[in-house]
Length: 100
Image (cartoon, rainbow, N blue to C red; front, side, top):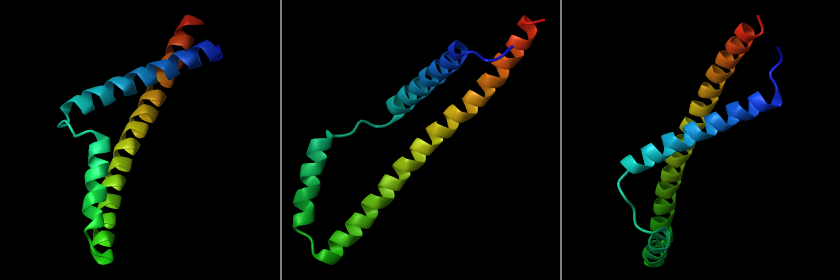
């Protein structure tokens, strides 16, 4: 039996739901943060007081923080991919048993 579009949609929905739940659980475990606008305004005020060299150091630091966020995104991508591969294998097994 061939995998139908409906089964593929079901798998995608299941993965999306799982990733959303995993992200929500992870986000709840993180300490709360200040509003982004407040942080941006404070950042601009601090940067305005720095020399170009000091601003460069701060920029490099912010880049490292951004890269850490990218690692988090990669984690969830890989989690979804791994779960998707497992789900596909399970669905194929179920379909084989049903088609007997």
